Image (cartoon, rainbow over all chains, first blue to last red):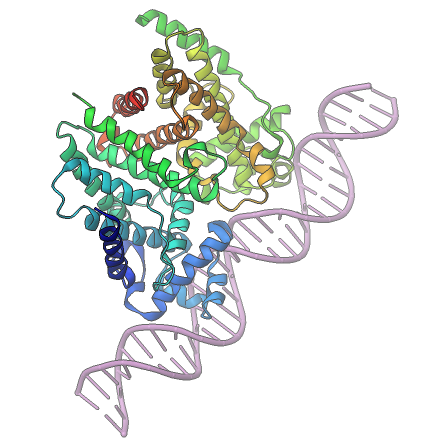
Length: 237
Length: 237
DNA sequence: CCAAAACGATAGTTTTACTTTCATTAACAA
DNA sequence: TTGTTAATGAAAGTAAAACTATCGTTTTGG
């Protein structure tokens, strides 16, 4: 793909994503924020405030002030800040899966498909003018998503819905892995490891750039994942 | 190494670890818990209670009750529950580094050294009779350590000390990686990714065993890391 | 045995994380 | 039009968490 085609491709995708909304699983909200203006305001300002304050210092009170509304209203949409964070993460993952699907569509070669999928995982978002700020969204998810995988969950039934966006993304990658090496026995586990690693790399890239020689730049993130790719293809042979 | 020698090795190591204490960095406490009996009680019961309740529901009040002391006393050692969690994680990492050093000592072959180092990372702890319950400690760290890597830290100066145990572990692994492939440019970044991946695998193994086909058993965790190993050795050649 | 540090007991403050109630507005249906 | 319902806002209140302060007692090390 030459430079121009790449540019057209990216613009096309960004345009399509500009007004991206999803119907996420019911375990993620009390009232679906995607169905009302005020719901979207909660998400929009929620992302910005989470970025400024971090999950610990973030409160519904501050959020209500920031979006010029009331605590009561926010509680009508989300049970607590963790549910809101999980919704936001799921939104991101769902969007990421969409990007991955788009980037790998109509590509026959398994190796190319995998390469493109991995690049999507570590691509930094720069779009700041959509109804949700994707650049900030990515930073928030990379910083806080580690906190949503909890060992102390209520019931295992809720779990499926709660993590469905994440799993959907992982599953898509797992399929691409299998295309590259049909003998892989733990494609799902590998896909999980890869997605998590990509998230961690982005986290270091954004917040600890000096701490980690591997993530001085994006190129090195891609390299790390390619290292994984290499291993995947040769595994079992 | 045959079965008997392996057993002797393990027993030896466990004995040495039985009364393991460390002087951890000053950024991790107000008053060093390793220097008093009550400090150790805080750590011991802290681990157990964190395991039962999870970080969210865990409070110093409950901890004080569990160890038959007072909130005030605990606050004399730790500023808040996050600092306590970080201390506990650092304790674990420090111990893990010790195990890694022990397991790889006096081994010349880089490949064997790496293999042993990786196995230490995904080895499940079963010791429950030390002054600290290692089995529970490992579960707590695998469940909660994701929450200590925060993007919203006070000053960058404190950071070095705050994460020094973690980095020390990563550095040791990075050195072993370099022995295996001196051309590696991002040994530190790779080591970070491997340690994190190992942690994640243990987390899935303990808490989501059915969710992830890769971690049905420990063997598959080792396989995943060996897959990484393979890649590391062949990288750049 | 004395001085200093460590600990416990009690009480108090501020903030968070919610819940409750009721009034207002917008929407839409008969 | 009017009546009904859903959505939001405003205000107040509660329970618990997350500390802080004071002071008396115990422990310990020199």
